[in-house]
Image 1 (spheres, rainbow, N blue to C red):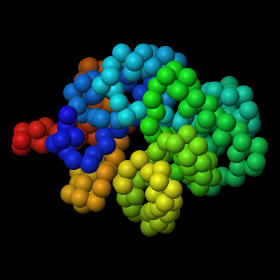
Image 2: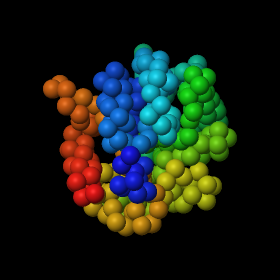
Image 3: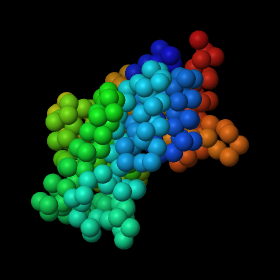
Length: 249
């Protein structure tokens, strides 16, 4: 497995369960040892398919729940309607905001929803080891404590916030603060969480300092080629990096 070639790296494929193409691509990445971790969505129409693939393929490992408060419908019936659109789907524009206020009713509703999405995976007899979220909503100021409390309650590790600067020192300091809280609570899934680009730029520093998680979104394009459905260049760079490491052995 490529972890012996790339020490201290968790390569996580997000969005398992999003659709059939993503499911097949993630299985393919496990088979070719491009990844060693995944997180899957439990409120999609492809949940049963993803569960079957997990049970039929022991190579799919280090499984987490990709909490989805951004697309589709909630599993519970308690979400206040102002967080949903007119069709009862998540309204990501309202939820995925840097500044939001959750009253006690909304907090309890979101806690129940996060738990329901985890419980659905556990009821399907999936062994869960970590937790993260669609669009990194778990790192937002109004949500991170809810996710931290849930991770501790279920004894799961929680994905860190990305720490690269992005031209905003305030954002960098906020993410660093969140990560320090997760680490103090012994819930961090890794020592660092970075994009593929950031990892490739500073990989020597990361791998010397502890485990680093990198994120991919495997999919197949129209030509049947493996890609990343958020950024095709990400998969190209990742596969090139692995190939060079393999050739160097």
